[in-house]
Image 1 (cartoon, rainbow, N blue to C red):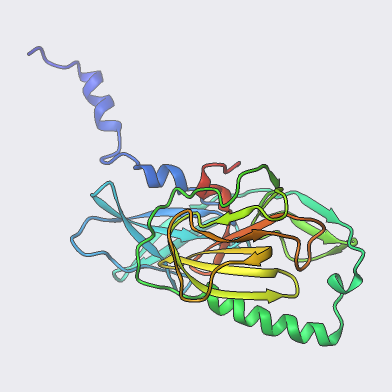
Image 2 (image 1 turned 60 degrees about the horizontal axis):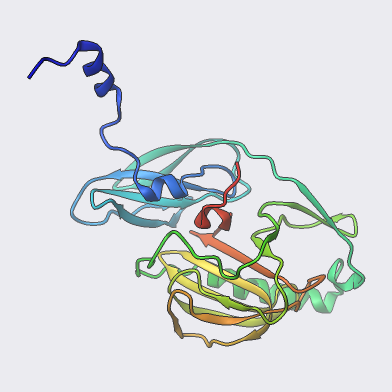
Length: 274
């Protein structure tokens, strides 16, 4: 065989030792409210990893290398971050991202500035939902390329700075789908139902644990068709679209949480926009 030209050999050596796998290409969007995929190396046993003191999802990519899939809170500033694994700090970098504003007018003033009685209710409900987001089960997610829970267009993206009657409130922590009331809501991946409730802001709500801190929340439902502890297959119907809670009309609000950080669900359906 003829010898390869030196320049061609140099070009080959310039490529990384391992190419990015499908999961990395799909999920690695390291911005506030995004996801970082961090290489943890090879090994027979799955390593453990933590970010900001919380356990994170670890999977094997392409049957070769272990990767940590890290949810980045919206509050994280751009710059250097790290995952702790095996007594080491494994670094990654968070880039910046600008999120737009959204202004909403509500007729019900209680949904903007709740009374003391409703504030106590909201605090109880928030604590209950926070405990659900903090669960970390050992099961592996059935799939990381999620199905959309409903068809139809996106009406409000993740991360919007929200103003209700010109008063700033928490950023939009999920995706909204503009679909008619009664539309079936399907699990984007297999999982176990860990919480159902009818809440002041979220209305009728279902939490599904997909495994290792990867959790979906669906709210403003008109009807809930599952119970706590129920196993849902991918595509299993969990409820119907509605307008319960703080909603101006029928739609589905879908949250995705990783290691107790709300992240952009668009990443998991291949619809992320930088």
